[in-house]
Image 1 (spheres, one colour):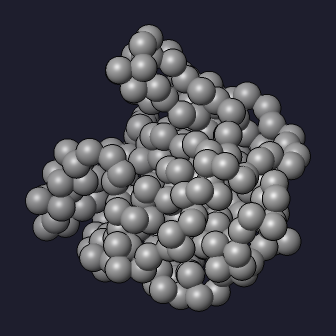
Image 2: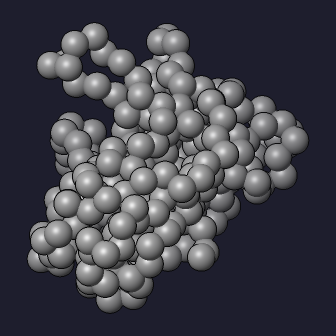
Length: 267
């Protein structure tokens, strides 16, 4: 069952710490350490070692405006997207049992752990509408990385519809094989989706300490069905379900270290 967990932090000392510009890898370390240190060592190791798609997504430290937390931020949080039914309970229990955490060089105390939303996959699909246009707000940089067999390793920072929705479709099938999407969904993704509008800028995101940050897109992007006559209401509803799913899964690569945090916008 997809779920979204908000972890609110407060300073562990008297003076609020000033986080570094990039906290994605540090939040990933905190998340896995919380599981490991509260009796879920095997689960922590499995989440670290498993190959993508992984059953969770993370944000870096964020402020109340969904921007990087800084010295002026009154509220600091990170969020966890859960994609596998079996993961929600142990993650909530581990975070509830965790007190102080160190994010990069900053000491915090977990002030609250909130289950912000949870929707079983069948309900995500049932609630979907046969829309023909969708808008996503991309709060942390999104990018797609080429594979080794595709030549020199490159970063593709633009959220092309085929890349975005093919990735969401792959994750849905990995974690909800019993809630099948319409058979024509892949065809819509590869042949009938286009960008309707966008307001994007480039931002940097750190993947690993000691390595230069990569660049990705931030902002807002709208997608639409190019020709609704070539679709069915059932298939368009499946695309709508994938958009709703993006709130939990994120979009693009490296979502487990804070990239691609996405908020679907109301129509």
